[in-house]
Length: 551
Image (cartoon, rainbow, N blue to C red; front, side, top):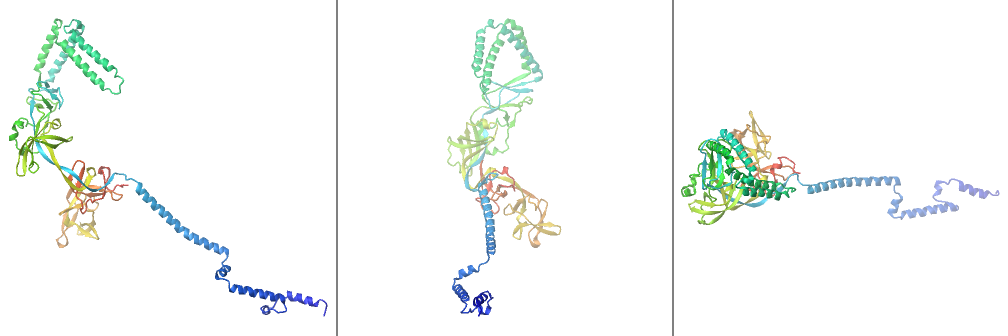
């Protein structure tokens, strides 16, 4: 054996590629391969008894594939959550907006309520009064206004022939001016010098007393000062004009001559008695007097009694009424009242009544002058000493007694509006597909048109005139089957109603008014097409049109 041959052989054996068949069962002589085999066997045994989770992790997918899968799972969850969040925020915003946003027009909820409805009755007014007529033709010139208190014998009106009186009045004014100028120059020599001086001192004091008010914001003091000064000046001028002075005798003679001519061209009409002035008449002043009340019948009230106005600028002829005077503050009302309402009324007792006038309602205390009781109606005479001027131009009057209470749906009068409706017999109404409407005739054919019924009664149904389906002059079928006949739409009626605002759009709903006062109305509830309790309506109908957006 060669030296070193054994070592070289071992080296070759280590470097030689092992035989696969022999690699499973290493030679006992090869210590290295034996150790490798034992190591692999131990690892195999460990893998056999390793928990399942660890085994999964050992064979998990590569990192880049795991991250991609995670990204897909996250994006799949985020997108639906984002969409849900957007929708939720939108709904919350809409709810908040509807909660805080106020309607553009005033609305209110209809509820049940009641109103007091006084019974109204018509009465005939009787007064102490006299009508004064003109005694000549000419133009009237009045010294008082209507409603003024006039004393007896006061000149209320002058009737002038202006063609001649204007010239004479101008000449008299010039003469008066000359007389006043002359009197001023000889004021110290006048027999009434002390009176003149006193009046002038009064005028000076008047001016001085108002001088401190010249910086005031209000100028009403000027009218008071003017009135006081005019009064003093007129008194002074009357003294000078009435003084008989020899140097002024010629002027006085001319003045007297012109005054006589003027009296022939004009007439002064005076008040025969003291009273309140009125410029209306009806020709019943001499028959409807307090003395004639027992003979005045309630049947004389026709409802057409009207007062005639007297013009204060138009020319008159002899016999024309010029003014009327009511000579007593106590006036009378003759009326017919339900016997049940006045069953306990006694003469000379006081009753509270309402007097209905053009300017409003006045509550008055009236005295029962007489009661003639009947089976159903009683003739009653009342007297009153207040509100004479408010009814001085009336012959008829409306009075109200104690009120009665009416209940129902209570709505403001301002919410009520009237609309034009087509009035169609209910026999024309038909139904198709759950909708109500009419069969519109077109030649030999008929076509169903759907309409919105606003209201109805036993004989007719009502639809808005501007409904877009049926119009005046259209021909529709009335009845059914062989008995159907053609009906031409030709009747129009008005219907009261309100604008319902249950949704965002205004919609007209008809109402049936049971009772009404100056502010509210009570309407019928539970109608088929009408207003219902707890509906929301527009408070003032003049501020909206149908179909207008409420919000």
